[in-house]
Image (cartoon, rainbow, N blue to C red):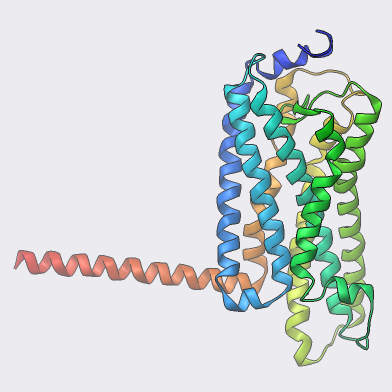
Length: 325
């Protein structure tokens, strides 16, 4: 086994008594999140009105990043449940994807907040060339999303090249216990930096949007729909920013302080990590509930499904009556 027995003693605890119930919890919550986000993506891309709104593509980008992240956690659950001190391969594979896709997910709230600010502020400004107008233009939407995925992956390259993925001391498959300061710093400046910067930028743009909306209480009828949409999306982003601040905090602290914090029993670490999965479970449903365009389409689907069920039941009842006669 690599390193000294003292350094990697936590691996025995990682695959110990708490592994089974924690793996089942990860599998159940991650599967729900993946299905919810697939539904949200299909709902958006199959609806012309939603698809035509460029801003919704960033919401789809967030949804796809969450799909990939929690699909990685499904593999994470398998690795924890079936793994052992002699079977660590799947945990290293899952860990690489968990960290890479997690870094990607962290960035989208900030991108969405920035897009809303630069789009809404042009209502009262003369249109002209600027970096923001090019970066958040309709033509640049897909390249910007793909570029962020690429940056998130590249930022984890130092960890990839140093076999740093595996049993995270926090209890899931992520970054193995660091044995060198450079690797720990590499982790801090990739995953942790992306998390903190995203929260900070989302907060800054949310504040700037709030100031703009207060300053421009009345807008023309032509721009009223755009303002209403921005208010709704920023309500979602406010919750999406605040929830991870509290729910993801334990994971960030435990992972970022691997070499500094005192060692705790694995079941305690895993109990602290459990809330991490709850914020992403809420994201697609919050958007559907709080943004009128999505709510209207979802309600339409519900009524359509209800009418189909009623029609089928009525058909069955009629056929039963005919047979009886």
